[in-house]
Length: 325
Ligand code: CP
Image (cartoon, rainbow, N blue to C red; front, side):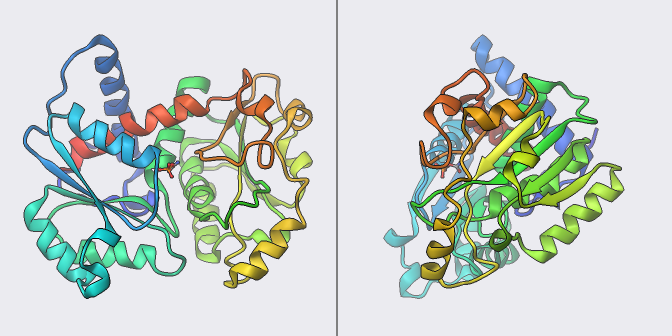
């Protein structure tokens, strides 16, 4: 068990080794159990987390803020538009200055081609851990909560479990590709065979695909890519289907929106769920475009674990904060 994570950043999913992620899971389950029993967990008493948001959030803000309070500390909610960032505060200044005020800096910045670079620039200048609340490449805390939920539902031995990470149609906006990228990097390390399904224009970043293939090879699991949602769902144990944008294919949002419209049939509905195993679980990080991306019947049905997934954000994040800050 690797326990010395004090002072570490979590920006990319592979920043923590598999053993370190296992430690996070152990601590997260312990925190969840203690909360159920009403036991106090003041591991970060008097510590303060800055939560800097460049993009909106429901779950991430709520779960980090509640999590810091459960750990005996405080979380400061800071929207970039209410700061002097647009008037010249650089990432270096944010890292240097906030690093002196706070005990951890959590940042959400999902702008394509910008977000991850911003987090890394802040981290270079910060004396305290930088935690990625989602950027344009990774959503590591979502992925830790997803892994925790899969372990709860399917057990710790996930070898031979088939996980489908599928694109789904959604017209609301071009969603970041950080969730599927985090999933294909992390899940092979825990023994799952991963199927990635998407229409041809919705490829993930080539560098991330290379790393995912390398992880699959290293951990002796399957990693297959296909462009047929029905074929992908067949006999799956875990269905994780959500929309993402066509940014790798085209950086033009109008062209991306036109391409998305071609694939309205990529919805998770009751017929498709029947192609998977009868005890398959349905996962989505939320928010979802209901009856566009996924039917109400699936989202609110017996196979859906979306609310446990959302709850587990809090426990997984508390674990990482308690270990790093
Ligand atoms: N899943 C997720 O990150 O939700 P929010 O965008 O509401 O934070």
